Length: 354
Figure 1 (tube, helix red, strand yellow):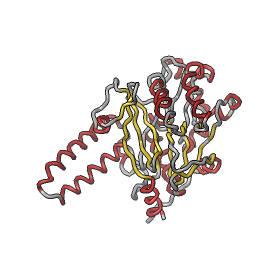
Figure 2: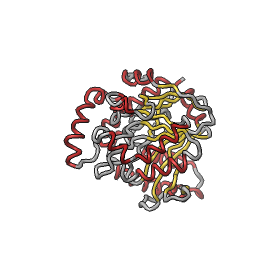
Figure 3: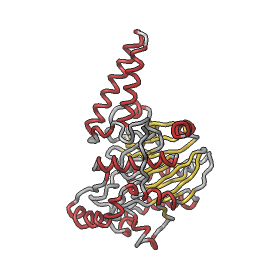
Figure 4: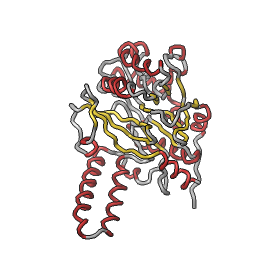
């Protein structure tokens, strides 16, 4: 029996008031979220990755004329004042201005910078949106920060802001968000996933700081690969068994490493649905990762989850890291975590959701 999908009214409201954008199939779009820019001091979560973000936006994406979508929580206004943030990160704001000058900048607000839509609206440097919609390669997209899935933020965001500004900041406590609460993360992703199913669209969010590709986390992707190889092993000829064994062992080792760092636990088993997972939800991750930053790219008919990192920072060995492409004149490299054709995703939505 098919389970009834309950539509989140807050998401429906955000979707209806979202700003429609116009792109051609040849446009290149980069989506990045959760900078949490502060005042440049110890409590500024963006301090470590800020220089990298500035260089890749200026020397890679801007030079190649990409359209930049900043998907919420760019400024950390729950802990720091806007003048202090703009003063310290003025060079990065100049990069944003380069995009805006060519009409290649879209800025979406999150729960940590929503003051810019409210009491600080007169201080906006760039047009600000709750969310945006567009069609690219004949597929409809909905890009929004992600906190709109939670009733908690619509009711208690001011209380969270008070705690961060007057308790966490003086004590030097790093930001607490849904990235630290796996039950809330599950709740948000589930509602976003179900909404995408209902609308038969592709949604791209941020907020949880957890990268998702085709509605799956890295952990889930590895598990599905292992399952596929185990099924292949049974029907394979004996001369291929040893090669398959090596692949399975390698993926099992990778899964063990992910599990050590992941407290999501059993929720990762079909976390959105007891049916086939439809590839309709993506999450760009965040710009304040410990080893690098992640983002979503739309280019040449494909959607990609991309990871940027400093080559001087220790990284876990993987095929992805070995194949990373260095950005000339910098210490930074770009690695594609996973990529797929939009036509495939459109077919999945059409055939499975009808």
